[in-house]
Amino acid sequence: MDKLVINGGSRLFGTISVSGSKNAVLPIMAATLIEPGLYQLENVPDLKDTRTMIRLLEMIGAKVEFANNKLLIDSRKCNNPIAPYDLVKTMRASFYVLGPLLSRFKEATVSLPGGCAWGPRPVDYHLKALEEMGGKVSLDYGNIVIKGDLKGSRIKFKKISVGATGNVIMAAVKAKGTTEIQNASMEPEIANLVTFLNDLGADIVSYPESNVYIINGVKKLLSSSTCKIIPDRIEAGTYMIAVAFVGGEVTVRNVCFNHLKDVIDKIRLSGADVSILKSDKESNDSLIIKSSDQIAPVDMSTSEYPGFPTDLQAQWMALMTLCSGDACIVDNIYKDRFTHIAELKRFGAKISLNENKALVTGVDELQPAPVMSTDIRASASLVIAALKANGKSEISRIYHLDRGYENIVDKLNSIGANIKRVDD
Ligand code: UD1
Image (cartoon, rainbow, N blue to C red; front, side):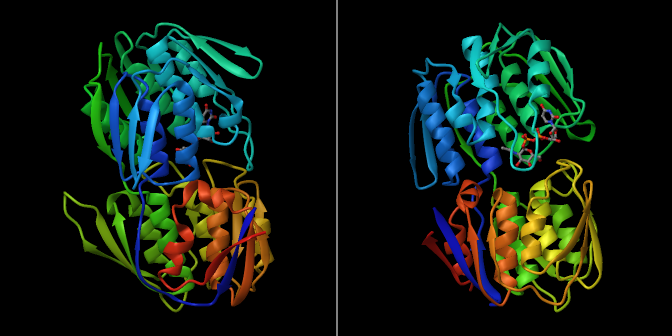
């Protein structure tokens, strides 16, 4: 198993480019199953999770080619509406095939995802909604089996769920009648899915102010299209926070400024300077981030889009470890998502946790340490901390990083980091 050896202490200068969004491409890949056809996806990040979804589509019967961040999916001969435990246990987002398979085959068998490193992550909203649309749900040897010819329905989620919104949208595009989803996710990744489906002839209307989608079922979608995946706002935010923390001045290319407004506001409050280099309708933005000598304490609470994403909570905590005071960090989306605290403390961070509220008291410096990754974003926070700590740190179990960050070692080294990937 590989580990990272990081010689921290160097400031970061240069240009770094952000890849396509992991959380956008995964549901869009699943959506190619709805209508037998030929699809081309561009700006696709080459990640372990993308590869897992490719394997799943192939098991279902699709032909897939992936090279140079371009993905060609031929879903015409799919005939096996099953997502087995082996794949679902390594990537929960495999659950995204449920809605598309049900739409196309009127039945689907998808292994029930277990919990994850930071606690239980239920799928009850997905199942309740699909039942309300007429699906008959049963459990068979750890697998969810759903059968039925779906009909439009009015769905109201108790809490906003990205995955359940995506699954229900995909199940509803060809269902009979109209589906209304209330308290739905308006995350940019779901908007990317909606654009893909509408370009294929779906009839989905979004009401972002009221968190509602209206989906009028259509008989057929087009059987080919091209879709460009949006930039990964979490990867972009990770690199911006890294520069604010480690120090330096870096241009972050291929960013969507609008997707990161809340994060940028908070980074500016912490003292760093963020400016937009270029922005036009056709291409994505470039941002210049310049660190300041002192990091001001900035409280942060995660919330659904457009709020501060839970996927940047661990990285924000790393930034606050050296702030000039106390910062309170609250995770309202995943109340147990704090496995990184024990590891950040190994660098000398001072953090106390009370339920879902962490209090970070800034210290003068971090010391190098051997630490262990526990999930994708926690791993990113450890990389950020190790880049700052003067001397040699080691991060083990980095397969988590490979799930969500394309070429992270090369990208960070190209702006002055000193990171080696070695066999453990
Ligand atoms: C997605 C993202 C993940 C991100 C999360 C929150 C992908 C592949 N993953 O995960 O990176 O951290 O959104 O922004 O896009 N919930 C239920 N029952 C359900 C579904 C969700 O109680 O059936 C709860 C969850 O426990 C959580 C909240 O709803 O507290 C939000 O979860 P959700 O948005 O569904 O997360 P994912 O889609 O799994």
